[in-house]
Amino acid sequence: MAVHTSDSVRGSRGKGAGLGLALASAFAFGGSGVAAKPLIEAGLDPLHVVWLRVAGAALVMLPLAVRHRGLLRRRPGLLAGYGLLAVAGVQACYFASISRIPVGVALLIEYLAPALVLGWVRFVQRRPGARCVVEVWAGLGFDAVGVLLALGAACCQVGYFVLSDQGSDAGDESPDPLGVIAYGLLVGAAVLTVVARPWSMDWSLLAGSARMDGTPVAAALLLAWVVLVSTVLAYVTGIVAVRRLSPQVAGVVACLEAVIATVLAWVLLGEHLSAPQIVGGVVVLAGAFIAQSSTPAKGSADPVASGGPERELSGRGTAA
Image (cartoon, rainbow, N blue to C red; front, side, top):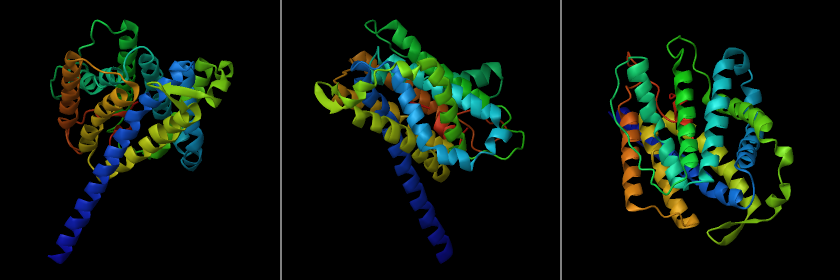
């Protein structure tokens, strides 16, 4: 009896630690747009900020890529898909969208991805799954291009989820998620180098300051936050959280990322949302919550792709 009690206590502590890590990951991811937007408004091109984020994180994660170099031979398609869609595609579209519309709205639109995945599963793959309808109030005052870019980020997430779901029942050993993330960042950095052309960037801007709702902040400090906290720390804590929790629980907690981003943007950037926009955001988050919580548990006869890019891989198969 004492052994069972001890195991139960350790299990509870593990889940508690996992929940804390999942919340930390959501907070770290949620702060990326808030830290990046002042850099964009200071004169950096959104693609240059994305390249700095991805290339910087890839450099930090390079030792993990070397450690898991066997993935290049075993799962080249997965690595290419993750780098192109979950890293380069999602981040480029998201950062471009926040240069035109509020951070909170861009991330809320991106959170249409789980519902879009269920639509793909239900109507294209014709597998049983939840039916949910998510509507977002874009607001007549918002930039249409910015909204389309945010939708592009959501579609890139969907493309990755569908890709990672292919072959999930092939019986192959699941790749280490940290290795996939490391190589995804390297692939994303390579692609973005060609697209963003960082050699044309005004590097002197990084030595100056950017304004966060009127308050000057060192540009280098904002960039360090984006790279080290909102990318490296966010991905790693997200992975560890999923290993301690179920992918579904971690995915539901991840929905708080949009709430955190909206609150941070409200407080730090002065981006206030109207009542109809807040209601629309609640509807989107409710749809994401339903999409996550209705995913069959591991081992179900009919698995469906679910979770965000960082959650899906570790038992799950992005962000912002």
